[in-house]
Length: 294
Image 1 (cartoon, rainbow, N blue to C red):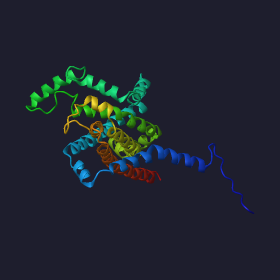
Image 2: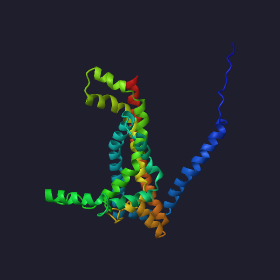
Image 3: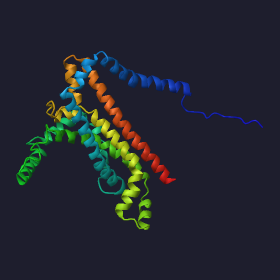
Image 4: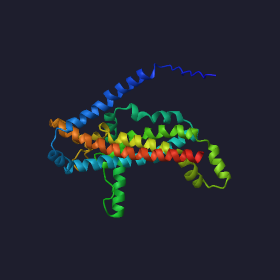
């Protein structure tokens, strides 16, 4: 008896049309612009490229950009986890209001957030003034200038801006994972004699690790590419508080398009390598989690 094969009907048109649209979209939005970036930077000679890559101002800006982005993403992992856990596991008055405020960095223009943060954290700002008093007291207590007397226009202010714009990625990534994590799993661990810390590190964290790594990579990528909020709370001093994006803008203002695109290639390659590493760890964590479930 011959078996009859029936193709599943799809709401959208066939594979050829949808694949062609996808390829066109990806080419116009991603592949062609990135190819243009590489081709434009290729107009420089090897000597010019070597000279540009060894520029101390570029090296310092890369350290500041990726260092602060990494630190902000790590801070967001802790703060985002606590926030998501509170919103999912505990009912309390005003929870929906706080949940809605989490998305504020998405809706707020980055330049506006930078101006607001700079206004709050200057010496006479609502948050900067008490911080100034605390820093003076603490530095006098230990006998050395350990804490900065002003947050705005320093790397501390830049870090706060990056934490602000990256927080929603961790919270929104962790919330669905926490909803899927049944509290009965923790109760089962407790019934088997596990302490709270053992249940947290051996049951909760392994289950949420893929979501945590996803949120971390998203927050890190957003921080690396951030410009508007950072330049307004930063003094943009070369080798001190200047990010690579601002250095690229300076080269464009000086009509050095090849040099600007070359810096873009450098950031692209470093970002790709770091994100590939994070995605590799995420794939390993997801596979290990599934194997543990099986």
